[in-house]
Amino acid sequence: MIDVIVAGGGPTGLMLAAELRLHDVHVVVLEKLTEPTQESRGQGLHARSAEMMDQRGLLDRFLAVSEKFSVGGLFGGIMKPWPERLDTAHPFGVATPQPVTERLLNERALELGVEIRRGCEVVGLSQDEDGVTVELASGGTPANEGVAGGGGTYLRSRYLVGCDGGRSTVRKQLGVGFPGEPAKVETLLGVMEATEDPATIADIVAEVNKTQLRFAAMPLGDGTYRVIVPADGVAEDRTVQPTLEEFKQQLRAFGGTDFGVHSPRWLSRFGDATRQAERYRVGRVLLAGDAAHIHPPTGGQGLNLGVQDAFNLGWKLAAAVGGWAPEGLLDSYHAERHPVGARVLENTRAQITLLGSDPGATALRELFSKLMDFEEVNRYVTEMITAVGVRYDFGEGHELLGRRMRDVKLKQGRLYELMHGGRGLLLDQTGRLSVEGWADRVDHVVDVSEELDVPAVLLRPDGHVAWVGEDQKELLGQLPKWFGAAAS
Image 1 (cartoon, one colour):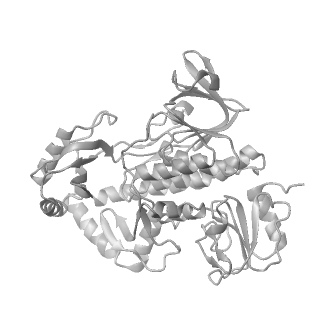
Image 2 (tube, rainbow, N blue to C red):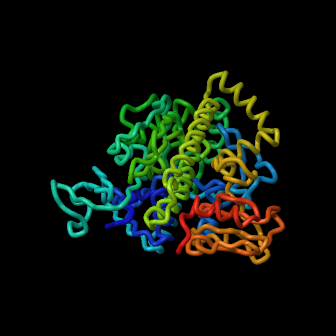
Image 3 (cartoon, rainbow, N blue to C red):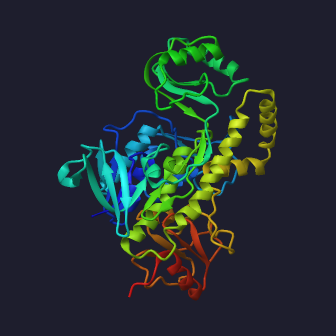
């Protein structure tokens, strides 16, 4: 039996699969597309996602093909310099088009032994106490790799994770509610060539942006542009791709010219709908990424939120498969990530309001821009958008408790260099502590850092601080909470 089936081979699904393989979980990714998509909705990694890639030894791969950026705020079209002294050793984002992100994560997953099956569409599921039966569309996988019957093919796994997008089949099959608000405005997005003079395009965009911020033509080189323009209403069926003529019509409506656009690479549309799954887990089936939450792309948070879901879930699901998960660990995925998703939905709703073109929205945007000139406001907004401000509720205790630990310099290197294997880690500056009984799940590192003013910290595999202190008895009370019973 397969340990975990991941439905969906986008960034969230690939990140999750790689995290599971770090713990020798047999994982199969099912992706309905036969070839990787060339659509680039997500445009990069925020600081927290850059930290995560560094924690797994992947950041250099992204930096080799990407540029760093450090424009802070970027909230509702308002851009400010990043505040100083953010609580991160990675005060930058990484500008990586989504197809490149998927390629890098796909390569990583294959290196770790993930089995990726393309052209495999999940159309049904059922679960019992022992596992999940997944039904694929007919022809979705060779018959000798599943159980054929009823016109389809069936696979059996211990767990299933739906990373299959906003129209998730897994979520619908589970019957999980997806409450929220439908789209009220829609935006066209595409990549195409333009014949108009680049300077003229830039001047027109700048003029239109004085009143309409959902309008852009960003040069990609060789006469190719990433074009964004408000749609004429909301399409009844958003799965239908817009036409080039629709782009031309809307460009003329707002800019007075269609820039001579032609030869589209891809065309798509997105709305401002905000919805969130009521539950991220039902028995042996879980939801992550857009299958669990959808929201406008304002602030560039969607892809990041999904891979951060995967980072939280991966080690917990591996613990359940491995048999050492303490009671409630897998349920903590919903408890921790659902509130984070809800906060992202809230801030994207606010940004859509700021992006409005009516006088009230314009006045509000001007006021908010002035507020962001205050260091504390800018810091709050930047930490919110980049997710470095996320803190899980682990109860009362030290201010570090529940926060992710930034990369700190040690006498013998860097903290994140020690986390590539996806295990827990006790950073012990006292040299008096022990993880005996948990050494198969937790690394014990005796080292010192001038940047850390506490005796010791216990980190979960996702880098969040589970305990702070120096008392061995207290430590022994926390290890089972996160890492199960001690090995006999």
